[in-house]
Amino acid sequence: MTTTSTPGPTRSTAEGATTATGRITLLVALAVFAQESTWNFYDSQVPPLLREHLASAALVGLLMGMDNLLGIFVQPWIGNRSDATRTRWGRRLPYLVVGMPVAAVLFVLVPHAARSLLPLVAVMFAYALVLNSLNPVSTSLLPDFIGPQRRSRANAVVKIATSLTIIVAALVSVLVVDDHPYVAFAIPAAIMLVAVVVLAATVRDSESPAYRAALEEDTAEAGQEVARPRARDAVRDILRDRDRSRLMLLLAILLFGAAWASSRALLTPYGQEALGLSRGDAGGLTLPSGIAFLLAAYPAALLAERLGRLRVMLAGMSVFGLALVGGTLVQTPTGTVVAFVVAAAGASGFMINAVVVLWNFAPSPNLLGTYAGLYTVGWASGGFLGPALVGGMVDLTGWDLMLLDIALLTGLAVLVVARLARAQRRAPTLP
Image (cartoon, rainbow, N blue to C red; front, side):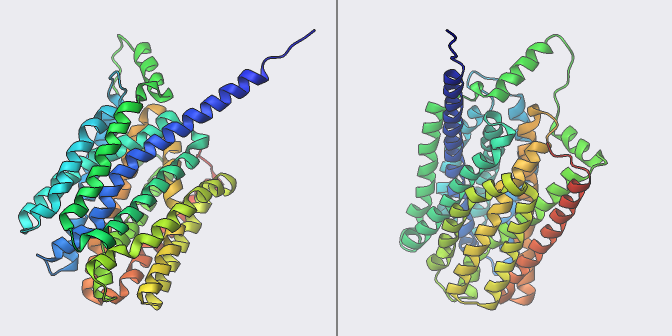
């Protein structure tokens, strides 16, 4: 009699792998949720603090983009450093365990420093420096543990966590900030502290496949003079490559990052100036759009696996831009909320898949942290330039046309991704 035992263990192994993938996805989502809780509230409520000292929308936008300017320099370096880190906890977690509590303390200090401009800017700078150091480290955990085929779905869960932070920031704005501004800043900081405790107790990225592969490579290279790839080497490789796909993708990330950051950093003053809302009510305009992003994120990942990531990115950006044009035509609080609901659903198509495409362009698993840093360089560059550029346009044309200004930036991003999609159809380079 012949017995076959293969199906049982195979199914059990697959179920175990699925459980492990789901667990690490949720934990990475928790780390991102904690960090983005402060980022979104920062984008919503720091501009009104700056406007107490500055009249120019361009200057407010420039200072709000300072964190993104720091990210351009900090994130690829720290991503590359984490690639090279070796501890018994792995290469990412030590940075999170140290950095997240420091960022929480600095965030609590923001409203206390707002009595005058220079202390406020100093605390903003310190907070942005620390949190920029955490971003590529936390996002790199996902490709460390999860293979290319499942990264869109896993990243969708992470982005759902991001959309929840938009809801949290909007709720705190509506319910707390007008009456208790200091408490309002303490709530996201407390979320970050709780998250870092959970991460420290449950995650050891020394167990990730990518980290084990890095250790095996270290062992194989023992005694040899092998230079570790640096962030600047990765950038040089992209710039010198005759295939411009990676460069075009980074440009698209920059442009759409500019549009997205503008829509977040300047929406509260837009609500106050163009719609006549209070600071708290204007800060709550993003609440329904956060729910829309949450609902659209996972379908955007599934559609990308079926139709192709570049197609879904292209369609999503187009929806985002057209929705903002509609919001310009129907300039009421309700019209703005509807426009941002549709825009957020469209934005999910780009934001779920762009980093996955860039990860899959990486020539080596040992550069995943570096490429996570390069993604955030593109996104942060857009985040720095976008609010200042749109703020300057607002200074020239008025707050009433702000959404149309953002739609123009989005149109440029659409053109770049359309060209990238055509190039990939002619000569595919994506794995």
